[in-house]
Structures are given as structure tokens and as C-alpha cells.
Length: 175
Image 1 (cartoon, rainbow, N blue to C red):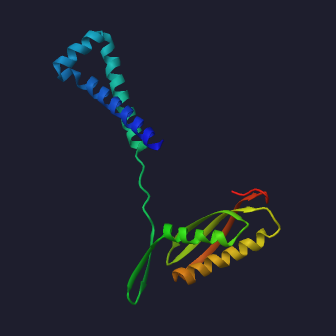
Image 2 (cartoon, one colour):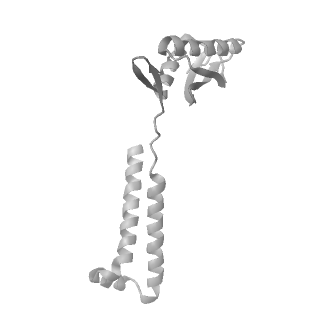
Image 3 (cartoon, rainbow, N blue to C red):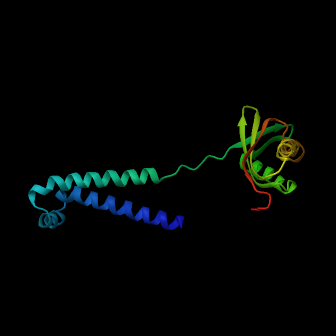
């Protein structure tokens, strides 16, 4: 669906730009000028020029706002005696998200790793099942994330582990 949407936007922008360029350059191409004169009366030429400029600006705005900047992937670098180890924050997030299977009460987990100087901060956003043990689950999750970073990845420079419960689902509902 995204592909079709982008294709339509590209076609609309191309038509807007082509039309505006044709209208603006008609004075320099005799065949276009004669054709446009047959369509447009002299008092409408100023309106046509204004329309061409508006179409050109609209096409350029659509094109510029439609271009998304690719997010630069954040990489953490760790020096050791043998060289440098680089791990992307996305890879660390994926690794931490595997902890979900250890917590039956956790319905959904979304970890986010943010570099902070020489340390990292980890925020884990959770959707949990309702129950009296939510506080304990959060505390255990904090410890497990820190342990996983140290034991699994060898990263001990974890400054904060924040567990954020974003949603509490009824116990009987599973996702």
C-alpha cells in the first residue's frame, strides 16, 4: 500500500511540475505558445502565469515534504585491548526484547536504548496483564535488563533502566 501511495504522489508531483514548466516556458516554444493562445484569451495570461507559479510551488512543496530523511542508526562503540566493538542500539533493543518470554504477565515489550555520554540509558515500555504483581514484575524486569546487558552483551555501562508500564490489559485477554 505504501508503494502505491508513493507512486501516486510521484505521478501527481511529476504532472504538477510538467504542467507548470510547460505554462512558464510557453513563450519560448512557438508551438506551445500558439496552442496556449488558442485556449487562453489575452486577459487570462496573467492568471495562467500565476497558476503556473502556484503549481510549481505546490509540486516542489509536495516533493520536499514527501522526502523522508533516513534515520541515522546509532552505534555504540566499546574499546578493548583487541580493538573496537560496535553494536547498534537497534540490535541491543532487539536483544532485550527477547526477555518478554521470561515474563508471562508481559503482553508487549518495547525497549529503547539511548546513548548518554559513555553510558547508556534503557527505557522499556510494557503492556502487562492486570494483577497485583505489576510492581514486582517491573523491578525484576529492571534487574533482568541490566543482567542481560552485562552477562549477554558485556556492556556494564548502563546508567538507568526505566520500566514504563504504558497499558494494563485485563488478565483473561492475550495479545
